Image (tube, rainbow, N blue to C red; front, side, top):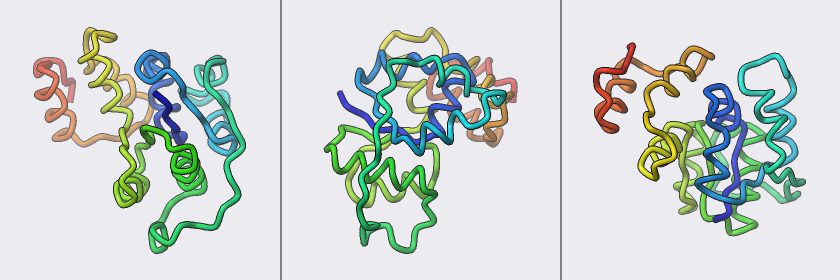
Length: 166
């Protein structure tokens, strides 16, 4: 499976020690060069060192195309836009993003999309992780904001309700 990611999942999964699950779940993970630069620009920040060490990530130059009409009016950052455009150009099976506008844009062009928490849930379902909540809590500790209600919902979904720390 070929997926293209923006910076959010790289940073968040790296910050909780789960960047490796991307390779295990999807095989080929493509990263636009601008996204790579964003995720690794500050090596002292959570997740950056893990991204720098992940030699299996395929860093590629993003296409130089005009902004798709479907994306007009959306507040996409450069990394999300380039990632989504690359995913469409490559006919990737999925686009990975934690950005709400990018998720909306992907759905608008019928590109399957998954965020960091969805990746953790899928990894547990596939037997790659024993639990989701410790990793979700590590993401929160590194600065990934999630509401208490969201955390509780995820805990119920993965049958780890006593492990929220929320």
